[in-house]
Amino acid sequence: MKVFEMQSRSMVRIGDDKSSLRTRQLPLFCETYNQFFWRRPWLLAFQRRICMMVRHDLAAERRENPSPVTMTAKSHWSSKTKPSRVDPAQFTPSFAYRGSASHRQNLFCEGVPLDRIAGFAGTPAYVYSRASIEGAYRGLDRAFGSLPHQLCYAVKANSNLAVLRVLANLGSAFDVVSAGELDRLRRVGVSGKRIVFSGVGKTREEIREALCYPGGHARANGILLFNIESAGELEVLLSEAARRPAGTDARPLAAIRVNPGVLAGGHPHIATGTHEHKFGVNWQQARLLYLAHKDSRWLTWGGISAHLGSQIFSLTPYRQALRRLASYVRELAMEGIPITYVDIGGGLGIRYTREIPPVPSRYASALARIVRPLGCRLLIEPGRALVGPAGVLLTRVLYIKQNRGRTFVVVDAAMNDLIRPVLYSATHVITPVVRNHLSATKVTRVDVVGPVCESGDFLALNWPLPPVQPGDVLVVWTAGAYGFVQSSNYNARRRVPEVLVEGREFRIVRQRETYDDLVRGERL
Ligand SMILES: Cc1ncc(COP(=O)(O)O)c(C=O)c1O
Image (cartoon, rainbow, N blue to C red):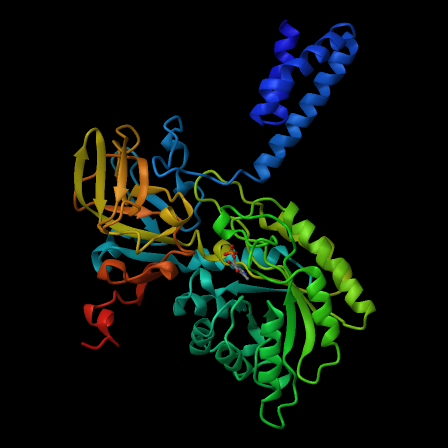
């Protein structure tokens, strides 16, 4: 009986969690299994060893690829989890509490206390650390070592001009998905040689804009690479390229974005790499397009691209996708289509709470091992990994109210300022900017909610927070990516300022909108 229990437990844990299997087939299976092993103890020991190995493998896989955090609207934080375990100050570069642990500690971004910024810029406000962005860029770039490569920062993650300038000064190239992002790069003075254009729905006008962007490859205007996502888009690119003024000799360089059929990404909305997603074209279609326009007068095939999704923690999907890309590149070469650029997109995950992202060196060496033998240049399009940890959102407590045992901390930031919690069930750690000796001990669970008229307007639910008062400033961590860029004017709220910290200094790199800004362009 004991053996039987042991067997059934291990079967359930290791194997399938389908309830039908457990309730109907498993007892019968285990009984037979049990009798078999009862008579052969040496086999039992062997089987135990196999179980341990499988468990060990599963644990390693889980560590590398934690299951996406699925949170209900009820709770962002399991009541069993000790809140003190996650302290982003421990793992977020350039942000640290300073002061006496027994008395009062103030959160600093580089050399600037965040309550000073809140006082100066008002709240809500996004704050970014320049040193953190630089550190993340350099760390990732260095990890690729001697492999011919180029980081192309995904502008969509955070398109503030000052942030783009920081990255441009580091030598970054850029991945854009709209003429608006292209325009931002033009304002920063980025050359077309450093721009890749992705995006599933580029309009004719956007393609035209990109074709005449200053300083593309081969001393002509244009950009480095168009990542084509459909046959229709390719037609538009060809027709626009054909209309370029006489004397424009350099043909635009293009890649096909293939949909690699690989599932990856931390939330269904940010997984992009399988056939049910709208992105890219399948391998067969891609092949037809490459061959059909092999000798085109109007474009040159220069690359192949794929993007798997976002918040990816396992290297396995990258390896799978890149191996397929690599064999595809070889096939194209045999067809007489040499590929210069292999673009693997972005997606590298970051730590918001307890996730364990791959270290840059492991990520880079996994990619390099596959790309190096091809002799191609690898393009990587990181967004979140470069700017996510570099930013926080400051918000001030307005009111505290109770309702049937639930405590609501009403703050001045709302879902229109940071939509990730409700859109992706994302967890952003929230802590007070100033903490004292009570902070660790007197924690209670509260809902941190905003002023917008939606029940989905929360920054965190059931969140462990030390005692706070109206007027206190809270920090919403790891908000540098997909934060401000996804903000809106919902409820006629003004979009918040953005502040860049550089050492002991800080400056407002985007003003808070005015009510005039909100109605500009409208007519009575
Ligand atoms: C084509 C492409 N490249 C790069 C990225 C950046 O992804 P991440 O911010 O996860 O690195 C995205 C994000 O959606 C994307 O669509």
